[in-house]
Image 1 (cartoon, rainbow, N blue to C red):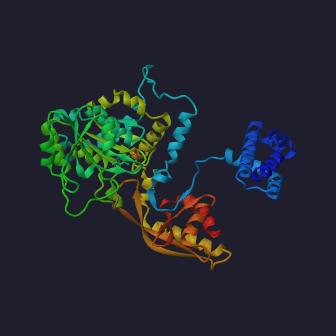
Image 2: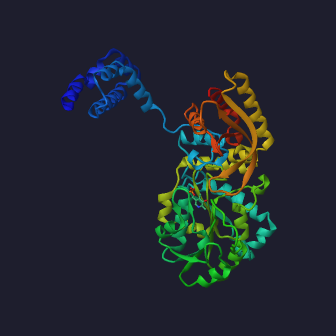
Image 3: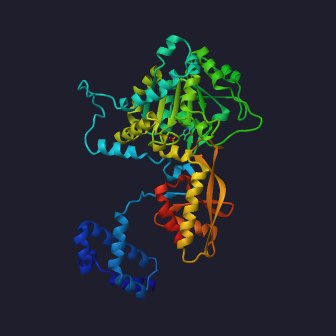
Length: 490
Ligand SMILES: *Cc1c(COP(=O)(O)O)cnc(C)c1O
């Protein structure tokens, strides 16, 4: 009986052509193009057909749906022509939020992308000789300046680099691949394929998004040689595992957790000395490669790229879009001969990055070279004082309270709190901040959070201990007004 009933409903559905001939739909097609509109018509009709098949339609609801057909087609068209990737307001206070795109780019990166990507460029062309060039030169120059000069200026670092002969060849080379996971894969495959890599059991980590050291190791065709225990590994453990198949000592930064209590880990200096004694390279996967001194923003114990190179680590790998504040990329910096082996590995060709990445990276590095740290958004955010954040929070609260139609419905309170760096960097480091805590007479905590997320622009807030919190550290000052407007509408 249902089937007969349904077939009657099916017969009422117009064909795509019939709908396209309706005058409203025709004028839509004149404006937006026939092909796109026809596709929307088909999508809407398919949906109706499905609803009939699922018994979710009767005569009456189908009549309503058919009357609203032009509007439904227009909605479908808007949806299919709108961007899926869109900007939002990150009010979580997590500076490197992997789900929210990690590091926002400096404005200069977009200028450099625009001027080089909208036309042809010397990506792999040497303008001086007219010969084919290498794409890495565009950033290697600035990395040389930031890393090699940084080391040369530091007496401790020069000493740590060892013998004078070694120092002269100690120019640091840098190559760029798609992300740090790719950097680790390329480095392990280039330096240790068919051999063994010694890693502490305390460093066999998984970094968000299923990057697991043992898995990357096996994909690189190197054999993982685990030493020590989860909480304690000594330099003797490394030494005892070195044999003639050993190709590399690997240290992995525990980016997203800390081990505390009864723990032991050799110092970098001990590892450097051991690696030298046995003539085996030492590599460190830093994850988040800070090119500036994190201690200047009160973050202790997070190694920077220079700290590791100073200490004498031969190769470091790090991300472009974590503390460096640039585009997604994996950077490998280290001894020129080791990096050269990676550059000539066919995997490097497979993992290489696009010209947009080089443009963005070069512009980011230039900001460092000019000491213009505030030009790099993640650095500016890290350097914001609690007082600056408090001033903006007070202004926003003042603005909302003066405009809100029903001041009793939305309650705003300022309180002290902490922002975090996130993105697998300095897991326990926090930055003092001033938060706006929201509560609503008619909405639960989750309801309030969802309403903020559904607004235009979407606002992503933090929920903590049953409160919805807004942390302006990660909100761009030019977004404050839009944020206040969204909050006023709650
Ligand atoms: C983040 C991280 C990675 C992965 O880097 P991606 O750039 O996300 O590929 C690898 N190792 C460590 C230690 C990390 O912190």
